[in-house]
Image 1 (cartoon, rainbow, N blue to C red):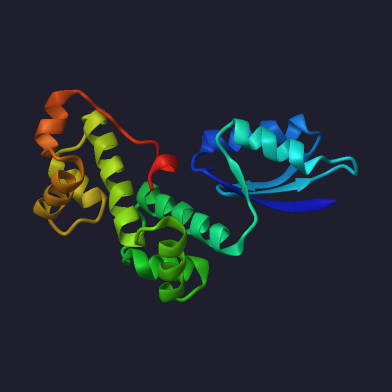
Image 2: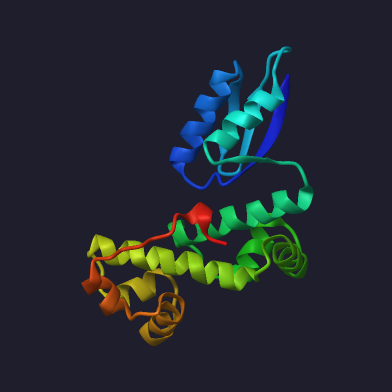
Length: 186
C-alpha cells in the first residue's frame, strides 16, 4: 500500500538520503522522494509511530495539519528559488504560481504558523546564502547581489548589516562564520 508523508525540516539532498534510510529501516520502500514529502510503499505491519520516532531522532517531524504542510511547502519553494536562481518573478508571484494558491492565503497561513512574514523569512534565507557565497570566496559582493536578484549592492548590504550587525566586509574578514542551517531559520 502507498502512503504520502509530509516531513518538516527536510531541506536538502542529504535530508532526503536520511529519510530514505529511515524508511528502509522500517521495511518501507520509497516510491517518490522530494523535499518535504515522501511516498512510501508500506508493508501491512508498518509501524507509523516507529517511523515518526526515527524521523524525530534525526531532526525531522511528521506533519499532519494542512496549514503546517502548506507552511513547509512555502519554505521548500523559497529554498528552491534561492538555490536555483532561475526566476525573474518576485517571490510572491513565484510562490502563488508554484503552490497554485492565492498569495494572501499563503502569507496569512505562514504568519500564523511561523510568527513572521514570508518576506522576513525569505530575507533570512538570502542572508544565509550570502554568508555561504562569502565563505566560498568566488564572487564579488556585486556578483552576490546579482545572483540573489537584489536591485543593488546597497540594498543587500543594508539587509545584511540589519540582520547580522556587521557589514559583509567585516563578516568576510572576521572568519567567524556563524551560519544557520536552513532548517533552523525561524
